[in-house]
Length: 214
Length: 214
DNA sequence: TATCTGACTTTTTTGTTTAAAAAGTCAAAA
DNA sequence: TTTTGACTTTTTAAACAAAAAAGTCAGATA
Image (cartoon, rainbow over all chains, first blue to last red; front, side, top):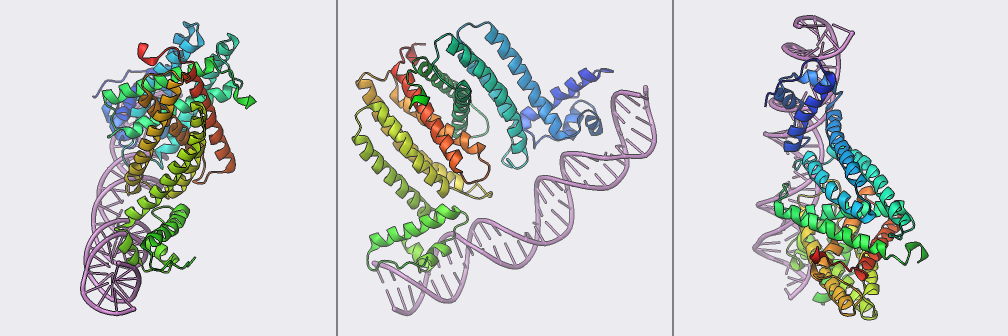
């Protein structure tokens, strides 16, 4: 790589480092990426990285948070142009999938696995999910107000739906052979997510029996 | 323990060993249970166990398969007494949950984790899921024939539903602190499974837009 | 003053060796 | 046919050393 860093611009510099880090992390995962390597890629000393980021975890977090912000920004933009709540959900599911794939790469940790990366990822995932739930609640409430969705506790509903999607992702990942996802595997996952979402939405539309009344 | 083994009855003897093994495995998991211990519990020599089971894995498999057969037997019994397809699904989900809890104990492997137990468990889980899918397909087909469910490919539907349930279980397990499941955590999981199932069934009942036509 | 570096210390990971524990075998006994 | 004690082989665990990576810092650079 050995790209040139921008001179005299702290903001741009940080962004430059993030891009380099993202490349390495996306390619090799957290544990197989060293600070040394990231620094070398952009002709910096390792110590310089520590001038901008207190530690490796912070750098990793910044990279992931970057992606997440990008995603939510785009999502809000897209949703703003849609009227129907059910269409919003479908849009969210689709866009969310692209983030999942990025996240999958970033968190690709070789067999050595958890114990160090797991809590870090868990924290990042929780924040993502919190924001996601918020948005889902907004959409579900809108559907309720417009009289097309029937469900009492929309927060509960949002958490359930979020679980459901993530559950499907996990199950499909377990089916994968290697660490990489083939095109077919991806297509299958997308299809399942869509189908589950359609049924879910349908269930909401005609949900005459509210769970609370049972 | 030190229970007495039944004399001169190979079938009963095997069952006796299985019960002893189940107790240990359910309590400590595969890796923390030794053949020696199981043997000692029933006043046998370790070598005797190897007369009935070729190796430790076979014994473990036999224990799990035992549980599964019991489950399917009970399930078929219960389902036979129900008319409506949607009620059958609810019954299956509920009963399936008790099996999940047993399975959870049996497969409780301490931090040392995968690499040895994982493929073994995966094989057992796949067989379970295959049978489960079969039953689900039967139920979905019945619902379709009776004109209350609308979906084209019921096999696909069964796999999706199975994924969905397992996904919810996994997500809820990830939320758990320790290895054990508290009563509250269990109640929450049961509630989510039920709610998801209800929405799913509802979605099927009013699924005017078949996924294939989109 | 803000940014950066080489040389340094500390922590984590990896590899190696050895001992203990558990799996698995077998000839002979009951 | 079933069971056992004594045996061999394989797997796990502990202890230690060496290597690699994380993280620090006084001083250089501009």
